[in-house]
Image 1 (spheres, rainbow, N blue to C red):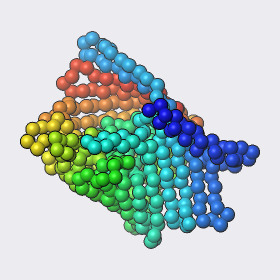
Image 2: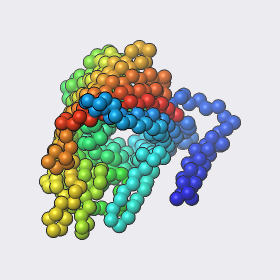
Image 3: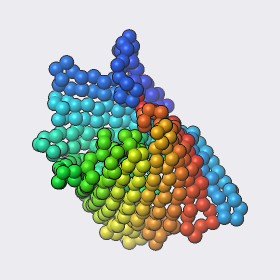
Image 4: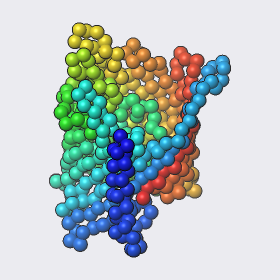
Length: 406
């Protein structure tokens, strides 16, 4: 184990230090946040931008009893994200690529099955080919186009952590292909479509495909025109849209013969003779609005399964079931002209109690952020109150985070 840790550290240090040593005598013209190295071949046959992201987090959690007050609590410092990213184009600007690694403990994918344990630092490895007009083919491992909060980068969020809706219902990165298209309907009305076929077991899954495949479709409508600088996938209104902009979207995901609790994430549905397989369906809707520094995001998600209760070959329950249910999330934010933002969020989570044993959760969050260089250098803090129905014990969370990207 120690040798493995040393190898990972030395490998990352070598990869990170090599470009610094190579260009140590040169003064880079890159602006902060636009990559450590940004190169283009002399014949314009390729480009590469190397970037680094570090996210440090302090998190405190306390249990509050309705009669006794705060009873227990714990806190921790953690390296929430530590990433290395390379992106650019190859051969022609219509062939683009993205390669991203995660090095913090919470980013390392661990896939456990009966026969093997697989660990991977790989977050994304995808090639995109704009092969015909507005049609683009994506091949590799990347985000599956489901709900907006999941597609928005965590670097571009108004809060230090994801909502309960995203944690329970988002579809993780996966391996496969996607076909994306967009067109204009009338003068300003824009439409975007995405269709994906993926392995259905999440990122960096073992080579042997278990169960079937996963099929995802997403449709986005932008009736008031495009957002400035792709702002429909940035949680904060930095450009301060001078005209109201709105995006309405829906997605449907079908994971055929899925073998995990939450479609392609969560625990494997392990039985006495292998894996329990069932079809899992996830439906989402989201509405995103921006105007003069004000943002509003509303989402709804629901999941059903052909058979939600996992069983062994003799009909006995395994104790690991599919997390079926529904959730709604609404968040509001306003960015002041000095780049301070105040945001609030309410999330309602209702999993099927008969299957999951979980009560209804209501979470209230208030966040404050200071963007020093947009989201490339930001300080964020938020406090959340989790109200668990039919429970005297509720929870309070407080988080403080520094996020920096080169």
